[in-house]
Length: 189
Ligand SMILES: [Zn+2]
Image (cartoon, rainbow, N blue to C red; front, top):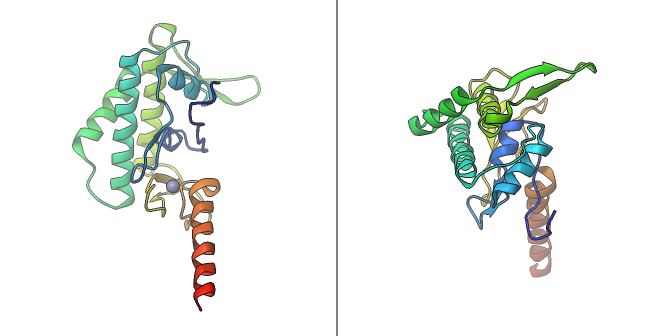
């Protein structure tokens, strides 16, 4: 993996792991799938391995990503879902032909058809987004408390009080900022 590409931020929820391929949307945005090959890499580590991807497919993927982000943000804010975003999510879901298969070990694997593998993979992501936006799964849609991030994430904590999309990045940064602010105050006083 070439060092110049930003690393992925992988979570446990497929749809919001996917929206996290663009981070710091309200600051200096970091595009984590800048090339078709990086989308291939992301799909591979996310259990949706494909052989290749075109620039047009990358554009479709990013359109789906931003549509999920918009719909998930509206859900977190208890606002009406944006119609264009809903249309894109539904289109990608309708075009996917992936099938869930059970492995001998009792885990689920997605079978993608070789001729339509990228569309199938995007269909799985769209369906995952639909299930969390529709409130079918145990959890709560929330927005990251970091002002430069505000990513939509799916809070499955018992208390439903998770504040950051990612504890190791946004959470940590916030804690450090508070610590430094406290130190400055002490130095002034
Ligand atoms: Zn965040």
